[in-house]
Image (cartoon, rainbow, N blue to C red; front, side, top):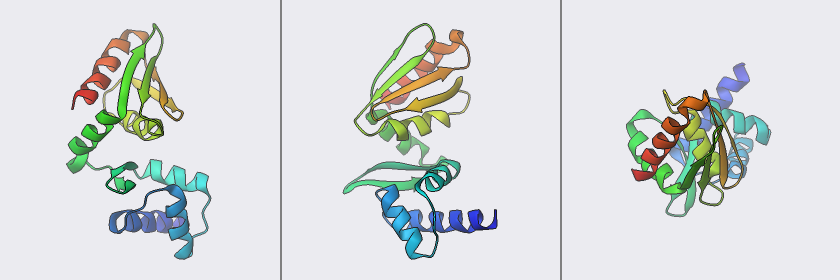
Amino acid sequence: MHNKLLRQAKIKEIVTTQVVSSQEDLLEKLRTEGFEVTQATLSRDLHEMNIIRIPHEEGYKYILHQAENSQAIAHIIGMEIVNVMNNECMVVVKTMPGRAQGVAVYLDRLGDSHILGTVAGDDTIFVVPDNQKNISTIVKQIQGIMAK
């Protein structure tokens, strides 16, 4: 646990002081600082720490997802969503290529959303509702994000 706290503190320091565009880039920076970490562990750390990847003028960068920049993030996430569809048991969200995982993390963290969880590929997210009755509410909430 002690190593995890040190590692996560270093991750926070790196993403708040440098432009980090990929997990591979972040892994390399951590290794330079003496942290041997696997990609799977880093991915879990980023999820736990609420660190997301957003578009940047030179590609993408990781940032801490905090309340003070949530409107800006919602706007960016909204631009990355292409379409929202549903049937009687699930919601499917189509995103720009390569952006499904970042959008899924955002959707997983929405408060009071009726979303049990998400599964993301490259440009498609399966959103599992807490109840079939709440599917239209989830669709409207995601469409609201698209409009921001």
